[in-house]
Length: 432
Ligand SMILES: Cc1ncc(COP(=O)(O)O)c(C=O)c1O
Image 1 (cartoon, rainbow, N blue to C red):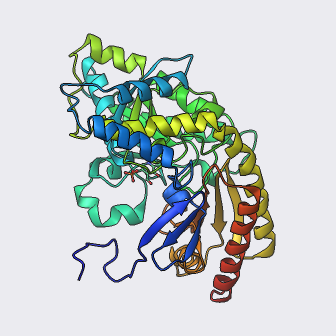
Image 2: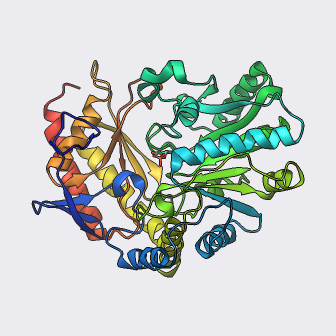
């Protein structure tokens, strides 16, 4: 008995030893190709000693200073690096320790923003069904994912959901139809009670690579302005170059009121997340009560911030965003070829190095096929990210395929081969 409370007490976990680039090794010497960057985290690849050195340097000077009393050079630098990447608009970064904390913080900041402006009735958060914004109770309440919510439903605040746009096929009218539905939902709920609308730009663990209809996000932004609802884009997965842009919302031409980040922000070298708020939000607090009534002990942690700074510097020096865009095209082509070879794969979708295989429904086995595939791949040396629930219920199996942005063409080919072998093995065990 090791005394560890594992994610699953009935499973045996290999012990991780070390990583380099897109590969990991366990203590028995087994090699794994990390085809999902963990959970779309390790954007700059494993084993980057420069990040470890930057963190050690910060920790040996000072590891902790409470943000109620101090700022740090690392936090200041990270704030300015993010802000520079969002110009010409002006944004301010509030650092936290992960994606769930970022969602909680954004929801509370939206609430306080409205309170400062005398809009006390604005409390509700609107989100897509399906979606995922974090496992803390506030974030889960705003997440449209049945399997994650079900055990905790009685603890969750009542938020407002709108059906995601996937039911409407891509066509010149699809954005308009979906926007009409969204507006009707806003009116039905009474816009005076809605504080914020949160959405993932490209679907992640719940909507698996779903790309919005052209013009949809722009229309969402316009509705948010019309009804005085803050637009929060959840870029926990999509941010930091994952979709071939620093921030996925840039390709949609929108100006969010807030953007949440985590995962790739410190690329897994330290727990780090952020809420990046537009100056309108910042100015409202500054000219209002003067304090955001919120905070975590580890907000703005200097060691995590130093990791984030080094990650951004590496991404800039190695032009990893552009590289991710190019390799994303190679990955998408590789996955399309897999689709041609397997009846189990329904479609390939995604953007940049955030690609997904949507699997054909297998009656009576929601979630099982994707999980089975994820387990089979793992046993054979490939890490991918299985999920389900993209149909809105527990059904809709999918796999996210998202290697580090440093992945080479040869490594993508190797990933494709290992994945196809798994798909073929699993396909034999199901009747389609
Ligand atoms: C889009 C999105 N938002 C928020 C989260 C929650 O992040 P964390 O697990 O760091 O709390 C996740 C995690 O997968 C995510 O994919």
